[in-house]
Length: 314
Image (cartoon, rainbow, N blue to C red):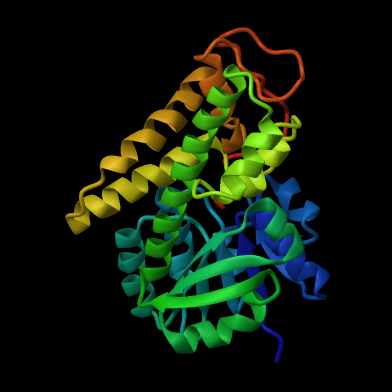
């Protein structure tokens, strides 16, 4: 029997995931604060979260943070029932996730926390990586739907484990991006050929996701619009800091990405893709740009229209 699929939060990432489900031949009932996001993804608009839940067997959430997830849950929980599956694809605080898991379980509803990785490009192609927390049986029931937009699904443990692994991954992502941005600005000011610098890094111990996948595009002026914004990256790093503080783990390395993405927000790049952190660092370094486009003046960000909006998480 086909599952009735509902999707709440069809922004930058959620819309792409929902579109993958629609392209696979499934009807999707969607709800977003911007109704045009629902129709753009090919879904049918629902009048409310409650209506969507009442007409769905599985409800997928792709929302900015735990505050928004909890607000949506206030509308969802009254419609919760035995057999319903809720999959939270947001990047959220694990302690909030565990609490919500307990509330939904009291209604017989399964709640999976499923952090995602891969960004807009992977979402577009249906090739995301999912890190899932919750019951194995619920994951197996949800898997046919999750497979429609993911290439890898890892069951990380009980409730909260998926969102925990997501925060660990995003912290490494943020650290590598911020550090590489700083190095590339330094390379530019040193007069080095940036393609050569990247070739050296990618053949050496400094290699990371940013050197492999981000900066070969950025040095050509392509910031890969559509991915995680500076606001959301900063939010994720703050969630990581809160997590490790609860765990009693020292975090001296969090200062770098907190400062870098906080700087990007302060200089006007809040809703731009997090790759523009390199321009924020460039602004404070004399108006440096890695590509050959005319450089902006110091402290004057280059803000494009893009399609990245802080409506969901990557």
